Amino acid sequence: MARPAPAPLAISLGDPAGIGPELLATAWAARTVHALPPFFAVGGATLLAAAAQRRGLDLRIQRIADPAEANEVFPTALPVLGDLDGPYRPGAPDRDGASLALASLTDATALATTGGAGGVVTSPIAKSRLAEVGFAHPGQTEFVAAACGVAPADAVMMLASPALRTVPLTVHVALAEVPRLVTRELILRRGRIVAAALVRDFGIARPRLAVSALNPHGGEDGKFGDEDRTVVAPAIAALCAEGIDASGPHAADALFAPHNRDSFDAALCMYHDQALIPIKALDFDAGVNVTLGLPIVRTSPDHGTAFAIAGQARAHPGATIAAIRLAGECAARRVP
Image (cartoon, rainbow, N blue to C red; front, side, top):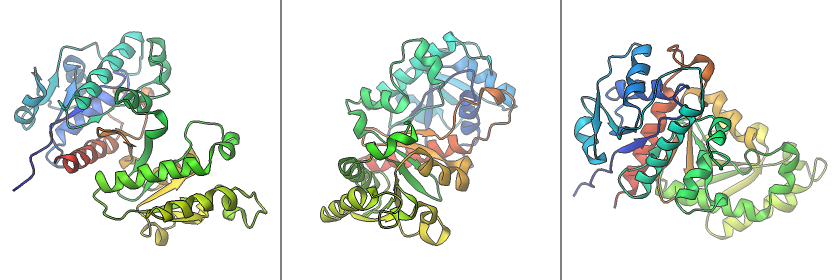
């Protein structure tokens, strides 16, 4: 018997002055070419129509009152749930736009947590703007985690593309803080979450984790620091003792070479740039931010609001399309 289809995906608007609305509209227009799963926008019917017109798209929009209607509407129109809306002023962010972005994010996340949506795809926001309207979280990842009742430490960022998957163990912190923050316990905790998510959401029966070294050449026997032999290596050994296929510490300058990338399913990296540089160098227009460790599926395109080019039909839709596709694949694997 075939599995039932997951509920349609909820897409938040992001900052309406950024590239999110036009890329959401573009993704719907490309739904057939990319075999995208059904999705609906949470609010923004008027501004999405304006963004599509600016992009030169022939977009039909249909308001829906219930997420369940999206499956029927999706083939012929972009379903838009609810009355949230605002003017389309690309490149001119303001408080009203930030309030709309926050309301859309809140509603989209709530739909995913209650089962009304199969998952949530969050469009780009401007954190500084959201802070002006009461957003108290470092970013959307922490917001979604809190809405799910998950501790921030257990909401793990993965960057995924067709070429590579990476996980930064530390994210938005000063590089000088990384050696103190990378502990055996952190590596173990994140390694377990990543391994479990690769099984549940990516369908990999026995995932292989490659753990990068913190220091050049893995510290070279302590010559360039001893963290790799005193912290990283023992953590890898502990993961292996739990039955997780983990290897390393691998010198980061060689880990992502073409002949090495097929030897692992995800790389655990010590800090932000160590994880993001290879993804953006290899597959900038198809990078997806996936939050692991949540009871819901959450993805986001791996780029920002790009206010400087909003409304100019210059933004590439690849990451948005990839985020929707990946969310649909993960949601389908979660259907009992």
